[in-house]
Amino acid sequence: MAMTQDQGRFTRQPVAGGLRIIVHPARPAPAFLAAAGLLGLLFGLPAIAVLIDPGRHDPVGLASALAGFSVVAMAALAWRRARRGRGPRPLLLDAAGLTLPERHLPWAELRALTLRQPGPGLQAATTAGLHVLAARIAARQHAAETALLAETTGEGAPLLVAGGLGPAVAAALRDAVLAARPAQ
Image (cartoon, rainbow, N blue to C red):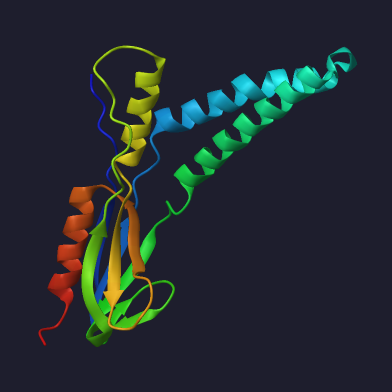
């Protein structure tokens, strides 16, 4: 039984004078979170054991504990990055413009809505092995990280409209926002 990766979703709610869109980003892949947690445990517990035992406080033992804790830190950062920004994000579309949680963007300032897809990650080969399994798990997590960006007429970086979506959901959200834009 093949499980499909959550691609996220959005809901439309008519409100007085406009449309509220609530974006629900994709949940992190459970296999990715489990792999990060297991990696932290696999390297963290032996590092703690080295620090607890005074007989292992030689340079090699302490260096291995430091290396183990660095792997734990990388696993914790991967876990945190996978879960960051995955809460519901409300958008309000009305005649005045697009209201993001951070600021209001008038329609006249909105130049374009673009999709930013993640760069190509490690491609999982067809052979078996631990590295291939890790590449497949990372690819599943990486698949739902498309972001919808608003390019403005002013200088500066594009504004994040929504992130953590699958490509099809992000394209549908872009079409929904552009459909709500009044004709100019």
